[in-house]
Structure formats: C-alpha cells, structure tokens
Length: 121
Image (cartoon, rainbow, N blue to C red; front, side, top):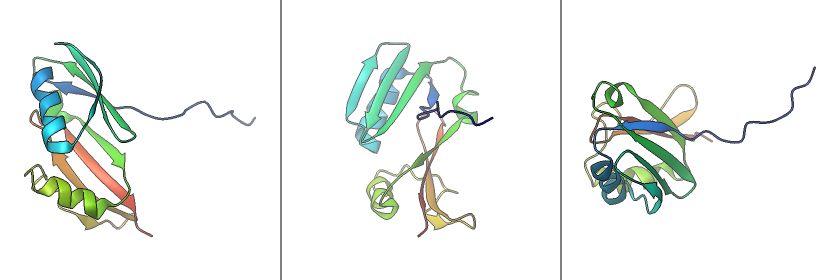
C-alpha cells in the first residue's frame, strides 16, 4: 500500500526560562524579525522561512537537553554573520561532516542547541 504525503514541515518547540529574554536574544543575536505571537508563557518567532515556538519552563534541564536542526542556504555567510555575536557553540565551529553536510551550532541563553546545515555539493 502506497502512503499519501501528509507531512509538510516540522516546527521546533523549544523551552525558555524567560520568554521576553529569549525573544530579545533571537532578535538581536540571530536576526529573527517576525513575531507571530508572544505572551509571558509562549512565543512564535521567525526568520526567513524558519519558524520556532518557545514555551515557558522553570527548569533549565529542559532547554539544556534540547536541540533542533535547520537546513540553510549560504552556510558560510550565516556563520560569518552569527560569529560576530559570540553565539557559536565551542564544539560547533563550521566544518564539513562525513555525512555530507557543512554545519555549525549555536547555543541560546537557556542552553538550546541549534545546528545549521547545508548539503555539501
């Protein structure tokens, strides 16, 4: 039996210890320029075609054990842009991976790890 296509895209829902502080960090350091929704317990923000949701939590164990992966174009340009804000993970510098991706990683203020990657062509 052939399955129909139903899945369109994934949107990460990450933990935040302080929604206002998180949104400000993503705006100022990562260039997020659209807010779809924000209150003290939840936020929906975006940059380009990437959307992320944040939920308010009170325990840092949640963000410190959470990550997401973002496919990008012009990984070198994005790396250069974000490097100036000192957000690159110490073990996440830009490099080519053996599985065919060029990628790097950042940490937000709460410890969420975000990996950015582009296919090596």
